[in-house]
Image (cartoon, rainbow, N blue to C red; front, side, top):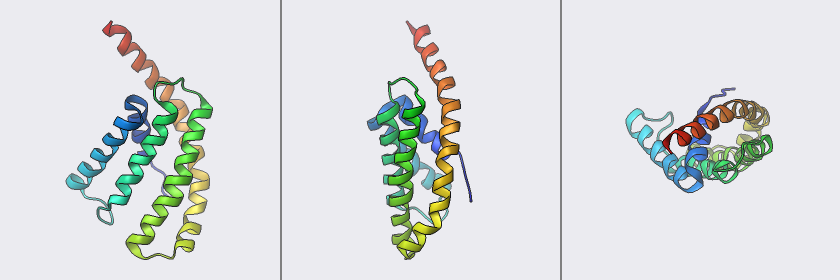
Length: 141
């Protein structure tokens, strides 16, 4: 099981730029990183859409709103269910011809554990980033 911090970049895009601009940023980031660095398994537009949807969900809950644990948890759980479990599993099915039920079952354990780690990391990082964001705007005035 591989657990990374890639979600944090998406969450920060959403936090700083909101659901719409953040989604465009996620698409640009995905396309550029694929073009420059390549991606394991090759490029697939479905995963670009998944990144955009994840940022949209995070942005809906976090952009210009107080940082609350319930907001982080709700956004993370929605991303886990709709993006990671449903969409990404379907993209893998389309790309590799995997049996959909088997792929879903294989990913289920990771997706039951990972969100709690992500919620904890986000709960620690977002308040610190929020202070930086606030200080930046205060010094501009």
